[in-house]
Image (cartoon, rainbow, N blue to C red; front, side, top):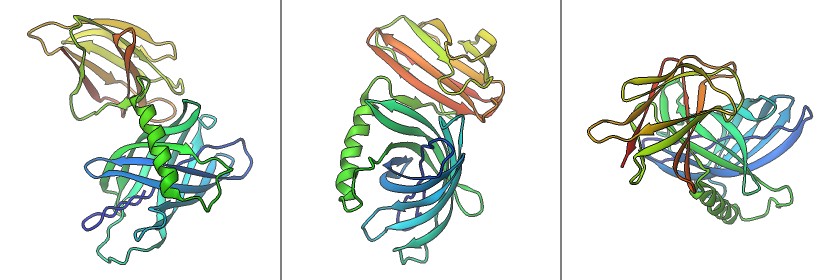
Length: 287
């Protein structure tokens, strides 16, 4: 991602899905939501060699702010996860010398929803000095190989946006949890709420502590794919806060916890938290 700050907001970003160990060129289009800024469309052309990737990102294709940037990254866990960083600007149509660029650093997970290959996750942007200058969420879909380069990318992006919005509105959409703020979940008139804690990505030894209103429910739980279910009572006069403490980081990076909150049989809200070790994430159950 390239984010132009101070004068104009600009974004460039990378994504990928690796196929085996051979070299191949892939194209992706998608949207990235930058906190306190907005959503942007972009295209990524990349080459995959083994578990390494390189290529370019093209931001705001065809308009006055079009920018191309170089990218570098790698795949993890047989292509289920990727990490990347943008490294430099190759060319840009922006003439404003006051422009400051913010380069994306992200971890993405490959999922299939509505028969669409989607890469989603969170990111932080860093300037040339390594200072954080942006953050937000990412959702991308692979550009079908039969789509010609002459296709109007703005129209294609609009169709993609509509598809991703449909995915987003589905109950299975995974919402990121904030580490810095209390995450409120509205539970209707329920007096009891069933919550599932599990590892929805790579099983890599993530351990957590789970407590509720000051009472420890699990002291040292190692996340599994199957997970565990815990029922919590929503009581008047109490904060009704689930606290998840990350005890370590897994073998593949940050501690990642998937959480399903069962509001009803047909309404299951899905969340994910990614944090370093010894972080407290708070979820408040609200009537």
